[in-house]
Amino acid sequence: MDKLNLKRTTFKITTKCTLKCELCQAFIPYLKEHKDTSLEQCCQILERYFALVDSVGTFSATGGEPFIHPQLALIMQEIFKYKEQITGNIDIVTNGTLAISDELLETLAKHKDKARVIISNYGPQLSRKFEELKNKLTQNDILFRVEEYFDEKNLKYGGWIDYRDHSLKHKTEEEIIEQASHCFWRQGRYYEINFGELHPCARSFYRMKEGIIKKDENQFISLIDSKNSIEEDREKLRKIDNLIYLNSCAYCFGNTKNVKRHKPAVQLKT
Ligand code: SF4
Image (cartoon, rainbow, N blue to C red):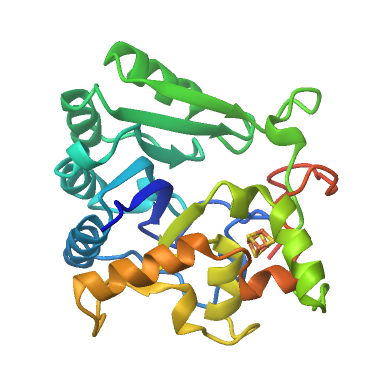
């Protein structure tokens, strides 16, 4: 049977965040439920995920803001147990608003070969711990990368996309295929684990979760309470990976070259 090698997966360990970005690419301020995934559930999710896939390129812990999670260091220790199956980096993506704990620094320092911290810099007003975080990572010789979302002349990816219009945009199959074929998320196979489910796109997850589109059992994998055998879910994942488009693509302008970019991290008032 063919190997199942995913390019990348983001593990959302919490939907709590310290910021309220209007154009949050994960729709965090718009979710009805904000909670941490417990350590016990994270262990279950990781065990099932790594039983399904043979390997993954980049594996990232994100949120919300992952530094909020009180058991982040323990969750990272669990993730590092699977490092033989992770061919690239094991990332934590943070918004630079919170200090890094000694326990987490120690955990990352033990796994320098794979660990990397991605810091989104939203400027001194929001990313208040940015400098402190950079210094601590440097002192401990831990790899990090800064994504600049502050200097308007040098915005990472040219700014953020507004995904909040969930109306039906592409009606024929031809139009939907055309949309998906130009979308960076679909072509790059960006998976995310959220609320114990593995989805092939964050927009697809959100639209199913909030009832904007129907929940389609063939377009996500349950990692906590699947009734399927490992082989059945591996087969299902293979089919998802080969889908030309997702149901959600009909409701989307996606991440394409010409889509309008906006100023990142503008905060909602309420
Ligand atoms: S078009 Fe939208 S739903 Fe489809 S892969 Fe891209 S972002 Fe996801």
